[in-house]
Image (cartoon, rainbow, N blue to C red; front, side, top):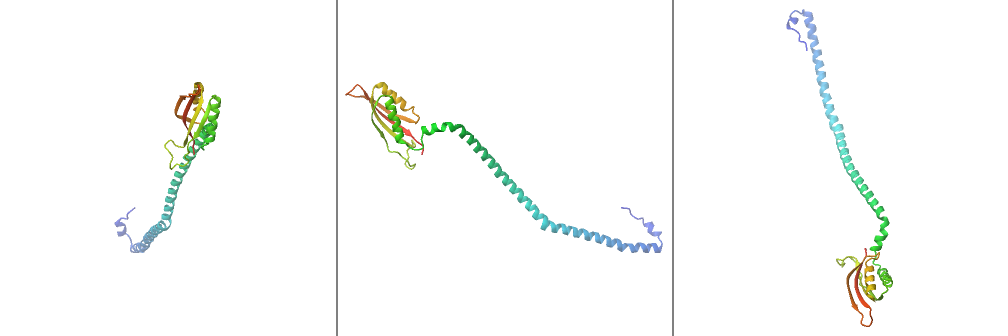
Length: 206
């Protein structure tokens, strides 16, 4: 800013000095208008900040939070979809083996089916079945035993030693899982045959 030298006023004529004095109110009014304009501008900015800008910022913050939540949900869905795709691929790869699995451990007890297999094995081994007894089958989990869903089969058969051994071996090699828990063999006094007593267990998945 350029300052006016005091000597400049000393050399002024009276008429020119009076002209300068007339300019003073104009300058004063100009400064007043500028200050008033600035005050009104700041007031307007404060007003819009309170009633317009602040709600807008709040909305932006809420939208950002919702976007983060939606992104988290999306990531979870993508992960679940990948897991389902992986399980579907594993299921498809095992689909050809499922009939074998369901035959080994059927979803129902199917005790007559198990007895039928035993009768077929006895016939193939050329032995005589004396009796096949199926124990009571537990169908409820409340009183289910530690061995799970299964039932006991008691088998009494008569035949030659080699045939009885063949029968016992084939009993555990059927397409249905049958385990032998105990086995005993005694000689039949009236014939040259042996009598075998087998306690077996068959499983199922309810």
